[in-house]
Length: 334
Image 1 (cartoon, helix red, strand yellow):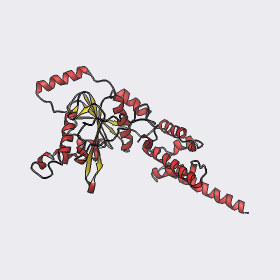
Image 2: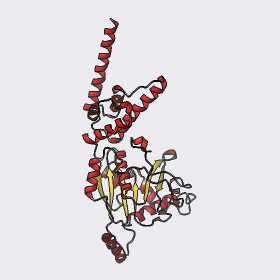
Image 3: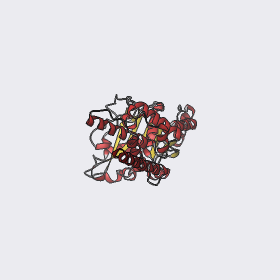
Image 4: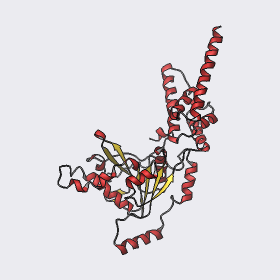
């Protein structure tokens, strides 16, 4: 949900799911996964202005090159190869992968083409479940025309087992259960060999992306999602203060400084935790309790490394506030 990311309420990319689409059994072996795609776009992402500007300059977000498409088609026909990867797979990477995921999804939505999103989830007893979601325009046989394939968190995929699964299932009791993953693998291969399909992926590092799926995605182009700049963090805190009146009286410039080094997802999480705590305290006391400086700084400190200058400053400030409170108490007692 957009709410969890500190974004405005907005509809998902599309709720009108294609009941015939695709390969949903890859997730559970039986039923289609009906999950919406996050409604991020470049206009709704907060704190990504620098990354979006770099993306636009790179030419990643643009129209399909018809001349290139024609040339690829000719080469496929001349060489008789239709299953080789073509074009580049764009890998968004960040040590805070959630930041990369958000920008990747926004990029996919910005392209405004049918989207298939693939990701893994933890299954029973440590197994992986492959979840596949789509917007309208995707049929049982894959992309009918131009589209975007989004591969989320490929550094966590156990793909070697999936790609070799065909050798293990023939004639075995689990053959039917394996059909979902087999279809998913076939769909992925078809997509990366289709010049009309843009392939986006996310990972924590280029090395992990190459180790997991590099041999199956063709040429990889890496796009690093940097930690937010001062301007990015200022935009995040300005947005949060506008959205949550209960924190609007706090010092935004102090928050920008003390959240230095944190990824965007942690800043949003810290702010939300502080607002939720103040909200619950208000309900319990039946009176309005705003987000306090101590409350919010405590939440930020929980995400900062303990050896960081920001953590030490927050800790020193808390100690000083405590000493001041003790001094006031002793003075009032006298």
